[in-house]
Length: 265
Image (cartoon, rainbow, N blue to C red; front, side, top):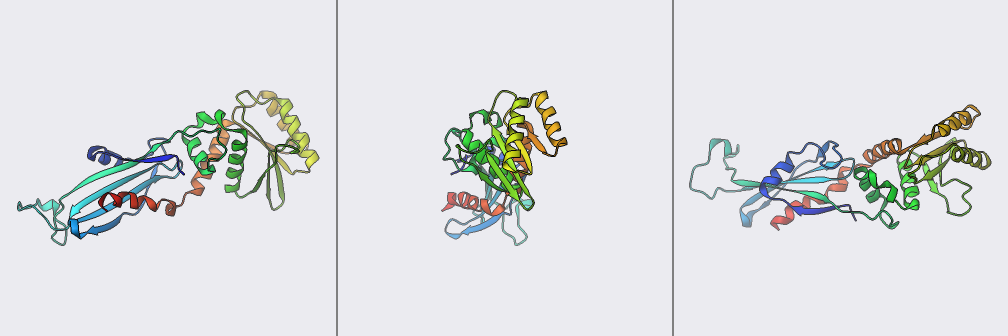
C-alpha cells in the first residue's frame, strides 16, 4: 500500500517533470537515484530509467529515455547526436510521477508509513486522524528518534498514552488530537500521572496549541524536578519531518525502475 498512484505522462510533461528539483507537494529537494540501462535488441532500443524521490513525503518521478541501438534513418545525424562509439541518438524522453491518493485517516488499518507520508503533505488533515492512529504515529516518530515506544491500552493507562524508554529514561507521553488549546489543568493532570507512574520526564503532544497558563504550569513542574516538553502542532510537524528523513532508504524505491522498463516489455 502507498499513498501514490502511478500514471503515464505525455512527452512534454515528462520532460518537465524530469527537470523538477523539488517536490511538487512538500517543496523538499528531490534525490535523484542512479540511472539503470537495458537493451531491447528485438526492438533496436536502449532504455535508461532514472528515478528521483522526495525523502520527506515519498513523492517520486521517473525519467525514461530511449534511443536506437543502430540508426534507422538514412539521413546523417547531427554531430551532437553521435555517441563516442559512433552510434547516433535517435530517441525520446518521457516521464511519469506519483499522483496523490486521498487517505481515510479514520481507518486505523492504514500502514503507519502511509499515514506519516500523507501528513507531511496534508498536515491540515491532522484533526481527522483517529485518536489511536495519532498515538501510533507519535510513537513511531519517537521510535525513529532512538526510543523504545509502547502505546498503552485505552483503559487503565493512568493518563499516559505512550511510554518511551531508553537507558536511564522512562518518559510518559500524553497525546491529544484537539482543535482547542490545551489548558493548564490538562498539564497539571499529566504532571500528576508522571509522578504517580514514576516517570523521569513527560511530553505532551497536541494537534493544536497551548494556553499561556499551560506553559506556566510546565515551567513550574520543571522547576520542581519534573521536566515536561510541550509539542504543539508546528513543533510536532518538525519532529515528523526529521523522522521522515531518517527513514529514507534508496533501496525502498528500486521497484520504480521496473515501472519505467515495463513500457518496453
